Every structure is written in C-alpha cells, then in structure tokens.
Length: 291
Image 1: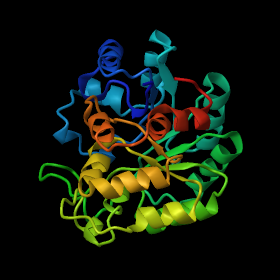
Image 2 (image 1 turned 180 degrees about the horizontal axis):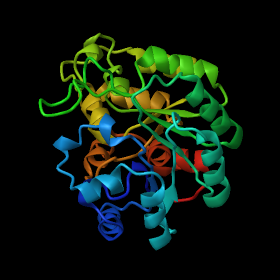
Image 3 (image 1 turned 90 degrees about the horizontal axis):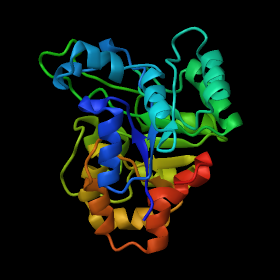
Image 4 (image 1 turned 135 degrees about the vertical axis):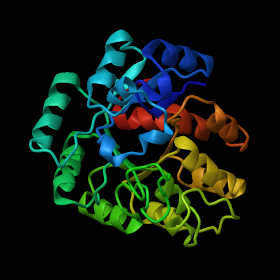
C-alpha cells in the first residue's frame, strides 16, 4: 500500500537526506512532507536532544533544510514551510515561498505564543485562500515541563483547545491539523491534559478532540509522533471508531523514523479503503500531490 509521511523534518535526530530515503524505503514510504521548524532555540529544550551546535542550526531552521532535501530527491519530498509570525514581513515571506517553491503545507507551527494571535490569524487566512493546510503543534504549559537543566520552566506552544477552537472559528476556510501532546491528551474526556503530557490511564471516551471534529469540518488529525500513538493505545477500540467515523480527516505521519504507527494501524482491522485514506489518499486530496 502506498504511504505518504505527512510530518517529518530535515536533519532530524541525526538523519541526512540519504539515510532518510533509506529509512523511507525500508518502511515502504513513497513520499514525505518536510516541515520547516523556525522555533527559536531559546524556546526549545534541545538539551534533551543531544544536538551538536551544527545540528541545532539544521534542525531548528528556516526553509533551507527542507530545500536541501528536496533538491537531492524532488520525487520523494514535498515542501512545507511556516515563518515565525512574530518577525516583520512574515506574510510576504510566506507568499514568496509559495510563489518561488510552490510549497504545499504551512508548518510546522511551533511557537511560544497563543495561536489566535492576530499576526498568525492573518497567515492562517492566507493559507485558506491559497489552499495550504496548517500543521499545529500544541503543548500545554502545565503538562509539558522542562528538564532541570533547561533554560525554561516549561515548554509550551500554541495554548489549549480553547485557543484551537477560536482559530477554527476565525478561519473556517483553512484546514488545520491538530498535533502533539495537548491535542492528543484531549482525546480523553478528562482533565489530565492540564498536568500530564502523556497520560496513560484508561481513556474516557468522548473527549474534546471528538467534539471538535463533529463541530468543525476544517479540523483534521495528524497522527504523527508518540503523542498520538500513546493516546491511541489508551483505547484501541475507540481509536478504531474515530478513524472510521472521521475517515476523511486522519492522516499518517511519523515525526520520527520508526514503523510503530503503521504496525498499530494495521492491527485495528480497518477496511482497505479506510487504510488507503489514512496512509495517502486524504493527504493527496488536500495537497494535490500523488504518492
């Protein structure tokens, strides 16, 4: 079955264009969307990642790393980009990247600011006008605490799901993909998302994510990273229900280089039609690129 990895990054955790392609081949991934990450190093906890100074510049970069990969293998990589909205000229820079490189995705949005900030809303509305889906990273400040050696007491991005809902209301023509710990902890109908980045207790069905999916047709789910898979494993049958119920709005992504999500999805007993949507057809339809 074809696969498009809808969420990954250039030079992430030591990978290069060559080793990334080798890894994609190993796990049967046809194409990969590369997202820029303009998160300032001062807003990250890179001490946990053991990056060299050179690698920090490659991973926490503007568009250059994505373009480096794309120029080496344009048939395997799809370009994504999101400028830091706090910098002057962000909208003009985004328009230039869309014009010059035909980027297909706006992301990754991973900034220490509330995402209903007017500067970001302006960018989101432009994305809706030109058909760029937006990938949002959401970490809640009370849950994702930093390590003792970090320069921050916590690291948070975006706000909570109240913030997300305000964004969905403000930009109804824009497709938004929810991602990361605060989003996926809200799969459960409890308050653990406020204090735990990765809750592992039994899931309470009918959480905020499902409610927002029912209410807002412009909300989609990015199933990448450990945050999604850990939430899925809290209630396998409920996960199957959600993917079947919202089969046009879940997409496959990794944000790493393992095969754990594929193994989990293939264990759910989903129909081939739904698995095809999950693995590649949904994202194909949104970005207009075939696997």
